[in-house]
Amino acid sequence: MLFLVKFDYCQPSTMNDEEWGQVMAREGEHGNDGIRQGKLKELYLAAGTNTAFCLYDVNDAGELHQMVSTLPLFRYSQITMYPLIDLGEIKRRNMR
Image (tube, rainbow, N blue to C red):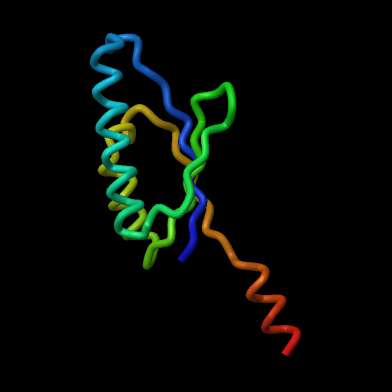
């Protein structure tokens, strides 16, 4: 199942830059793990913002929840998940 996940993240005012840098480094490690596992397909940052968009290919919403809820940025983010339908696949089926 494909999901587009939007992360709006923000450094807490109680966290110094060094601590935030450590959180971001751990986040990068988790992202690399997701890519190696074939679960995180694409990753984009909206220019000039603290908003990231990630394309996940997972078995179901439960697997996505497990992956996202263990991210270091989870507690510092507003997260919106969108299940996706491959319209190209629908079009190909209808053309048969």
